Length: 139
Image (cartoon, rainbow, N blue to C red; front, side, top):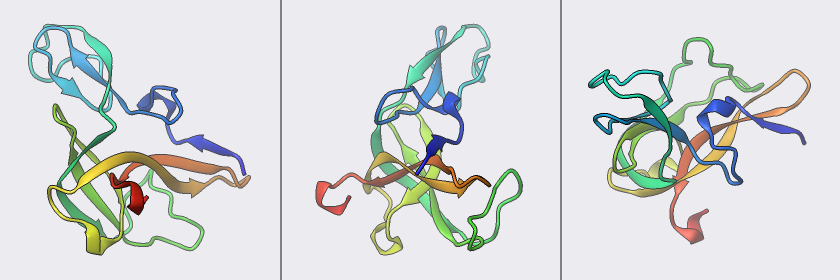
């Protein structure tokens, strides 16, 4: 099966992929996704910054309704999924949570992974980032 990442600019190109944000050279603020100017000081240049691949769930919810475009539902239609903020130390990242709902709790250690976002018309599996279990035996 052919796969590709949903947006190459979100990742560092390594295998396994890591998320890439940006850090201000002036005030050291970290953002994700990358942007050209600092939202805090607007004085420094923004330099690419690879984010940690693990953190903790800071908050979460269930996305029960179909999101607005550019969301593309899977062939079987929208299915509710867990969504949360993950604390990576220097930034909170909003992401899908690839965990059974019964295991999700605030403070749970998680690790970066990829999950299928949708399939293109030609069957290519489009992957997006998510956070799943940090425990070896639960992956």
